[in-house]
Amino acid sequence: MGDIAHSTITFDSLFARDFREMAIPWRAAEVPDPQLLVLNETLAGELGLDPAFLRSPAGLHLLTGNAVPGEATPVAQAYAGHQFGWYAPRLGDGRALLLGEIGHADGQLRDIHLKGSGPTPFARNGDGQAVIGPMLREYLVSEAMHALNIPTTRSLAVVATGRQVQRETLLPGAVLTRVASSHLRVGSFQYARSTGDLGLLRRLADYAITRHHQAAAEVGNPYLALLQAVVSAQASLVAQWMLVGFVHGVMNTDNMTISGETIDYGPCAFMDGFDPGVVFSSIDETGRYSYRSQPVVAEWNLARLAESLLPLLHEDQDQAVELAVEALAGFRQQYSAAWFAGMKAKLGFREGLGDDVTSPLVDELVALIQESKADYTSFFRNLGKAARGQSGPARGQVLDLSAFDDWAVRWYALAPDADAMDRVNPVYIPRNHLVEETLDAATAGNLGPLERFLAAVSSPFDERPGFSSYADAAPEGFGTYRTFCGT
Ligand code: AMP
Ligand code: MG
Image 1 (cartoon, rainbow, N blue to C red):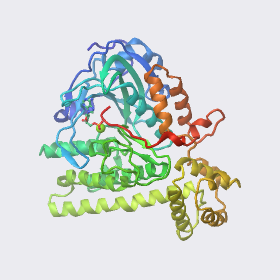
Image 2: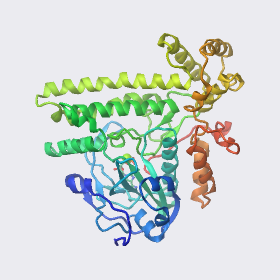
Image 3: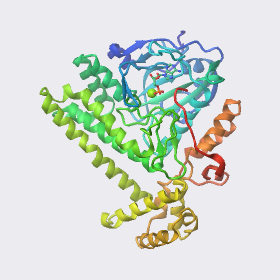
Image 4: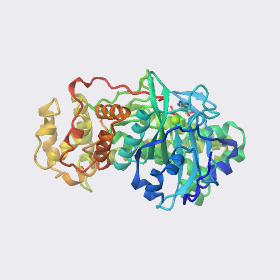
């Protein structure tokens, strides 16, 4: 691995230096023929990185981990995790490397992380590779989530490696550069706890507080405050997923962050017709990670975090458990409050209306669109049109017209704010049928559709001429959508 001379990029190696028990220094696999597929110039700018440099041969070597600045120490991070409920004591980055941390314009640090950079000691039987389609999928969906104002890891670039990778067929390989507030996961704490080294656990918790939840350092029991802060961040995050119809698909504890950012875009999808039981992932046979299960699963995962933190919460184990249970109890209340507030915004309710008025209207509408299996995203956008007096499109999406009419009379009486609705109900989301088409085209070498799709979902609330096909529901024949992990 060569050094990058004359580069102005300086990486910190905070995790690599301070968590040697959980960080294996490692090198990326050599990339024979790097070709840039997509670069996030805006994000590069926020990170103080020069897009022209990133596009240069030296930049591509950085984005594939083949040449990093001399002071950088790329590492594979160790973590454990419950996968579909089963505990795996040693997962870790099997095909990924943390290059280090750099500063963002907002004054906070970001992890710069490569996915698909070759096998590490955590690869088990995996090949350490990633392929173009799934890496562009993460880029597209994570950038769409960011534009929807939902906390998420970001995507800086996808670089094709020139290597063929064996999947069901031979597919072109790629490396994604992921940018995250950190890669600390619930599974990171499970791993630290499992070592029995309380000093390590405490250092990890201190690091999480410094990186994400600084206010926790100011109170009497900082580790309890850390747990409460993660509970709050996840309650808010999952509520936002539910409000836009996002199904993560693989909410294992290693795929849940301490920062409260969405991470790991594998089998995720946005639902089309409203169906609370919907599951997209081909391996999720029991529906563990269905749309409606997400809040319950998040709470379950947070209980695993709480267990890992117990020795830090109180020296007396019974009292530690009591504190943990109390902190976890905050999840339901905070999740429900965030979801209800979000629904009131989606319906354009003005400030000051009582819950006794708004709550039945929210519940009735949800029942109505569920019974009608209405296209979730376009229904709410059409409701904005209804607030302007054009009720036809939304009305046309429900089955029980008299129930809708009765509902609409009471809703109109509250003078819903159509402009406010348009600021929270997106027109453009990464619709499944278009995601598949776009990634197939990109894999075949045509990046034009991806660029247009990115333009649509990067301003999701701003309806523009020429983009109408991105707003349309899936065609009749699209059928049941299936997504895949391990890609
Ligand atoms: P994920 O389902 O992406 O969250 O990954 C779960 C675990 O499998 C993580 O430890 C990954 O690093 C590992 N993994 C996934 N795909 C591969 C691969 N192709 N090669 C090596 N490890 C992998
Ligand atoms: Mg993962």
